[in-house]
Length: 385
Image 1 (cartoon, rainbow, N blue to C red):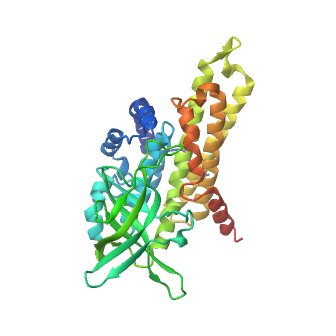
Image 2: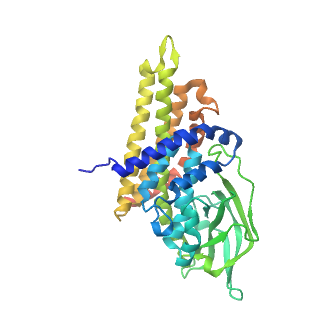
Image 3: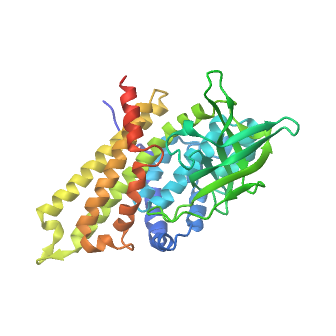
């Protein structure tokens, strides 16, 4: 029989991150969210805890854990705040993981120790204005200059997380580097260090949610980097990214479950304190049923990402299950945030309210790292349709 209970080490990690989120993140995140400031001190503490190194080997400065350990941490962080959780998720799955998976020994030695310690952050530049989920529509180009042995990059990227903080050290850029024999675009990924001439980071976006997370548009104007900054095999950038995105969907599912469970936590607490007509509103069946349905969604969504993660770690094909997990969990987060706001009434509509922030944060989970429509497409393909 399949057993999805956490082992002793995993449970210890969960409790540690849960306590950190409640004691260190919860007291300060509302102010960061309201002022749209990046929580550097929180990120620094997460680095000292080893959270950025959870799925990486010790020889790379990591903690020697696995991807499921990262997911446990993401869920517990997102129970309190999603901006902090997505900072970790993007830094690991989109920032450091491509270098770990596809980097040369020299690239790993140069970048991974700082990334796995949380001393620095990395970003992945895929999405472009006007392309969205259509990575094959990439227009950013990188031309090899044989005379200088450099790549010359021109183009722009949009909605890139962790790309403009004071501790961002690099962005891995997806670019067209040629034409394949069948006439399609040859896509490769190239490391662009922060501060490279011609690499410009636009001011941060004004967003509906994730207001304490760092997100920017990037532009590249004759940006020159050494040929050795090519990440992985030339022309394999799209295939590499698809693998990274499949893993990232499990991480986003875990984050979504955290938000969904956080809505339950806040609603149970509020229903026990708020009185109406002479008794706590938690005594009324209408409220009880709303919260019961919320708990059901969070629990079943958690089982989905546990299953996808276990398949990935077992070396099995997990693409379809990652899509199922991400689709179901993001739906649960969106639904739970809506009903949690209903339980809280007018207080849930206030920005200072935790569920008010969760309501604003939930929608992007149905869009980021592949829209819900893309997940349905992947599931259908996995069924042979």
